[in-house]
Image (cartoon, rainbow, N blue to C red):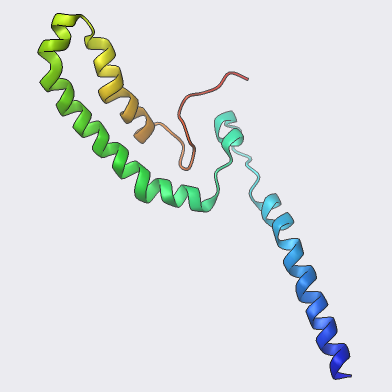
Amino acid sequence: MKLFRSTAAALALTTGLLALPAHAEVAQQNTSGDPLYTANAPGAFSMLGDLLIARPLLIGATAIGAVAFVVSLPFTALGGNVKEAGQSLVADPAREAFARCLGCTSSVKNEY
């Protein structure tokens, strides 16, 4: 009788563990309606990493880019590419830091 119980318990545990990925996939579906968020469908670990690591680094990159933009402003004004320098040094990192959904890989919206 002990062999039957241990075999039944092992079978039940194995079946339960095999069903976990299917359950996790159903629980992770997005219903927000945002096509960018639906396309990326970030998980909890990617959201946590984005919040604790990527966002502070992007905010720092925005601040450093703003300082670099101000320092390079006389040279970019002479070259006539102030808009491009501001876009790449300040606006792009700021958009990725503040306008991107949590856990998404890019804030660029793809046309579907």
